[in-house]
Length: 135
Image 1 (cartoon, helix red, strand yellow):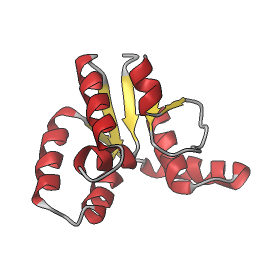
Image 2: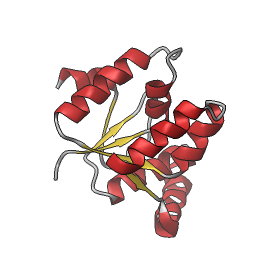
Image 3: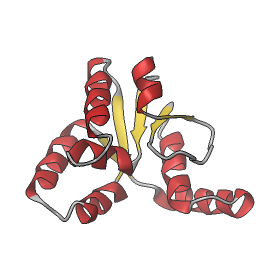
Image 4: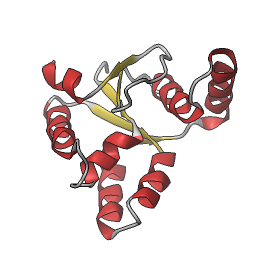
């Protein structure tokens, strides 16, 4: 399926945290993604990161229960981590972003949704809310 999209951790935080600047855009984007029948992917480390950042409230846990049924929560794996480390050693860049990008690529995602202004280029299409909503 060509409709695989990977969510950066900041996208999931935007969806959950009503106080975030891009909360409304995140909701609009998520609805369009669901309406257009995309498969949603995210890394498993996102769960602990989001839980920590949002102070572990019950809404987060209920959200996790729901997405575990509907989304693909995937791991980096040792090979993916090594690939990300090698990429960073050769090209510089943020290891966490690189691990997520390579995880997305290794899982066949064609799109990577993030709010980061500058994101690593690992060979898949990096987009933000504006670009996705324009499609």
